[in-house]
Image (cartoon, rainbow, N blue to C red):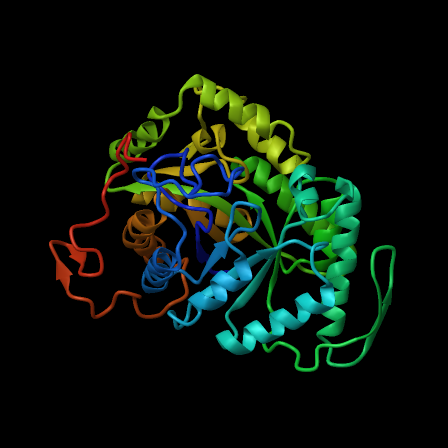
Length: 401
């Protein structure tokens, strides 16, 4: 079982701190203007193309793009990026319930033809009722997961190439059909930590994604989903979503992590924790429990830092250390059964180089990656670094935003 490395596309904006990265300085509530802020990088197609091209050159297999109110549309953005990349796959996040499952199946088929088979699907059921209601979805948490099960059953049904009938609580379809099914069929990634999510993952997911909890807790999740899948006669693979801060020395990596906290005053952290605490997502509550809103003990497991989750929803932990230490932690998770690593860092362009040039060779030397030529083979070196990143990736600088 090889390690599959994926990166992240910040379609809501990027920057050098954990706050104020969004292109809208007011958080997007007032959408009448975009106010330039020093160090904030708007998610325009030119910048996202830089990240996508870097990820491809550095040997990442795919990039994840998020979905939500403050993000550019994942389908449109990534299909545009297929035209400026050659091999890179796109893990496109979308929400069942805000789109017809038959239309989603058709869109996926079209995407596969346009991209020549580079689509992966990340199903986001949704853990925030306020966010769901913005899209016209008023179902409660558990019923959303029940609907997701029907949605995925329908998508797979209409990919079969023959008229497909379905009658469920949430969907009734007669003769559903994708005239030209996708080839290959996109792998379906799925996450969810609640009791309602587990059976849906076991019955439908190709890859179950968890956020970056300590290894012992990740193992418990793997055992849970694997057991449910076995009862369904299925095999599910596993992935993890983490940030990374990898440097040439451990001291340098932790100094970078500390600088990310420099801009976080107590009021900012308290406000973020209050907002995140309202989430219905069990996974989000597990993320919050890792640090309890305190900066005192943020290294919750060796090289696993919970500082990101002080202000960021969703993935709230980072692997921090020198390149060998970060590779050690990836190897540890891999030994538990994790195959897919969906990674990110601030800013995403520079951190892709730090990881790709520092950690990826470590993983390759340990035999954890598929054998093949280096993604930078043939690129002349300059001062010890590939010419693709002259001078190396800069450190995150406090106050640079």
